[in-house]
Image 1 (spheres, rainbow, N blue to C red):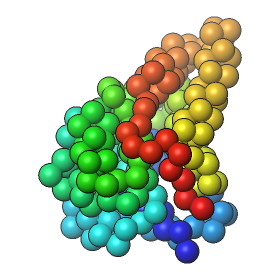
Image 2 (cartoon, rainbow, N blue to C red):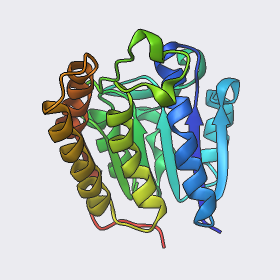
Image 3 (cartoon, one colour):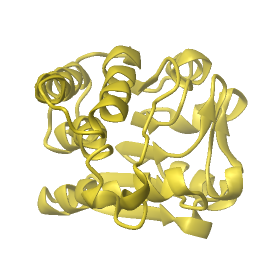
Image 4 (spheres, rainbow, N blue to C red):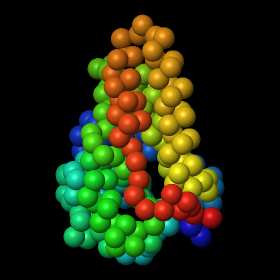
Length: 212
């Protein structure tokens, strides 16, 4: 059975949003027959995540803070960095974390990772005040993370890395057109988030990589 590992720390408001919006991705994974392994909350720590990575999951999705060289988990503990990128050998990765495509993505591919999808800069996800308690209903968040979620959902459905990015960008384009015609106060932060996703997401590795 195909294995999907997902990390979901939520020790700050931004990660709480990503945690909630990842639930739909998990639902899709189960519906498509994946063996889902969740590293949620305090379980998104270095020891547990690296142990699970050593078992070579087919697809890994990280939610967390990041930099050029690393991805963080619970309480901002480093989960993987350029020195430990060999743990990503043989897998497809989607890192929903800022900047980590730049060096970590390259290092993962040099260590025989199949593909690494991530961001070249800062992914912006701004919440409006009244949306904080109910992130799934936040109109400033919904366009950005609907487009973002299209990446892992497409991989889970058997699409290639290149196809997943195209599908995600198509969703983003549709959302941007809708927001440009809107006078709602959430339109500006939502558009900034969509622009950051659309222009900063990219990949290293094999564009045709997929999990059958």
